[in-house]
Image 1 (cartoon, rainbow, N blue to C red):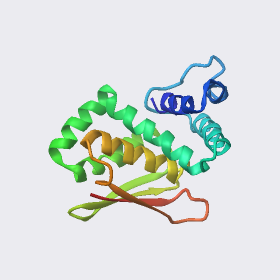
Image 2 (cartoon, rainbow, N blue to C red):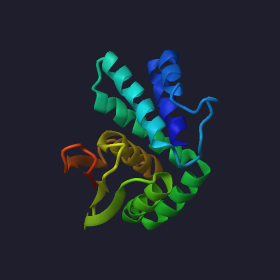
Image 3 (cartoon, one colour):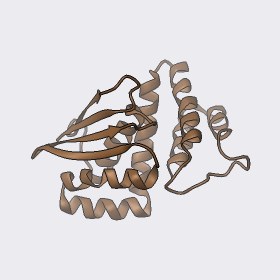
Image 4 (cartoon, rainbow, N blue to C red):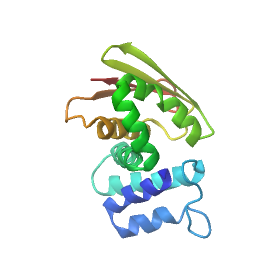
Length: 176
């Protein structure tokens, strides 16, 4: 699903960018897994998206954020995502965010993820040694939360704080 969403986000830059991103999939050109994905292919595909964003005057990071946003909204529209969103909207935003670390553990075999409540209207996701990095992950979190909770523009604010030299460890603070 995540690799498919990267291809979908590449579509915003044209069919040639989709074709370049698709080159990084398996030899048969098939997506390898549903919710787990090979990190090498993901990183190469995201690099294609980031470079395409730069070629159109956006920042590399904004291109990755938008790709993550597509992944987040796609997840909420999937059968698993719809079910989680339905349960989450009843339980509240903190409960939804508390589920992100376990969802990440199902999707990737690297890094560590955790969540903590900061105030009744804010929380903090911690990503440690996450190879995908802050832009895509923040886009995915913000996109999925806004889609699941139907939040208006400006209702959910986020801040990214990188905590190490290579940007593989970072915090995403959300305020609502």
